[in-house]
Image (cartoon, rainbow, N blue to C red; front, side, top):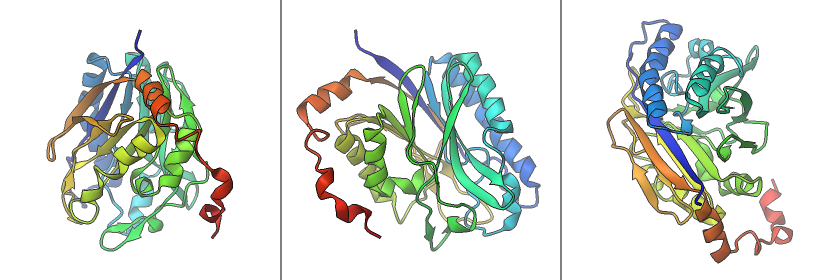
Length: 289
């Protein structure tokens, strides 16, 4: 009998584009907007649900404004506690990307993983931090991740996480495969223009090269006052053959649901023996500074 996992992705626009409001109020509006989609996922039998990058706020990295440090929280912390309740309610694994505060003045771009019983399993910290003009000044807000490329054994599948800009680096995507990932989620915040043409190239390529499924999430809309461009949505699932099997619109708040047949991983890897034929002994150049 095939092993089917129902996966869900949520893409959302920011409902409170008003810099005059307190950070906590903007975050609450974004959190509240996600709740009906989380409930919808539960009703549709979603078993693993991933939210977008820093889901409970705007993508504030165009600002270089230290006021946004107030958006950071401990992981696990209050948002993970809230999401743990929904995970347990719906027997649903959740990948929850938030702005993490490790200690005073030390912040990470992080995704928490919660199991279907509501238990916090661990976190992934974004490894590759961009500083790209205009509008992606992430080094002002985040330290590079220091936790490697963990894979989490959840109730339904082995799950890995790669966050936004990470997707431009094949090395970490391979590490997730080597660590046993069956599904890799890439929560993102990316706008039309510079990298849109890569959105449907890189992640299907990772899926093919590593023989796993991916869930790729992008937010939608424009966010004032920065207005760096339109977040173009098109969140999607892609299988180990590189085929996109479900895709959201470019401009709507949306839940994308796909049934992923994990047996396909064995089928693909039995044909393309990339793990057998790797040559790590010949890759010394990859780890040179």
